[in-house]
Image 1 (cartoon, rainbow over the protein chains, first blue to last red):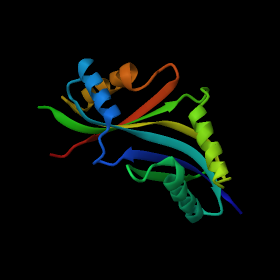
Image 2 (image 1 turned 60 degrees about the vertical axis):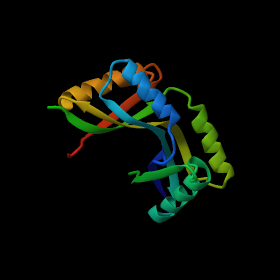
Image 3 (image 1 turned 45 degrees about the vertical axis):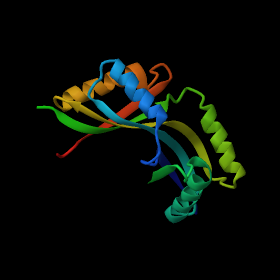
Image 4 (image 1 turned 135 degrees about the vertical axis):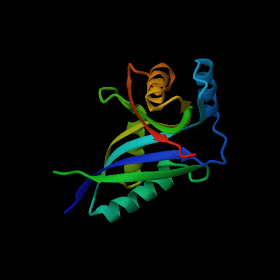
Length: 87
Length: 87
């Protein structure tokens, strides 16, 4: 029997990597009058459904997907949640 | 007295809007052998710090920022979390 999961993947730039888009957004927000904003970092948020034999396999597959395609491990970190779908 | 909050903003395409990047990633994952993956949707994940008088003001400012700059309300939805920073 296979099980279906909804997953949310968060991909963020490593803290040591300069985030040029984040810097641009921060300066845009300051120009709009939001002076209290700082440390803007922009990442990716990926939603997907995955069908696997069990949670361990889904977890393993998702780690592999992140390493191979969803994130660039050289400059990005990732984390994800797996939520079983009630059927 | 002002208070500092860490915020996480999630910007997603509205369900009715075609997600071409998500479709491309999904087909890429299938080609890599992950056949169990579907409904891939790609959004933005934004981290920022905000200093405001209180949680209500921070909440209000963040809504305005999302409407003005961080999200495109015509095609995107957003939601966010505000976490008070202990000092």
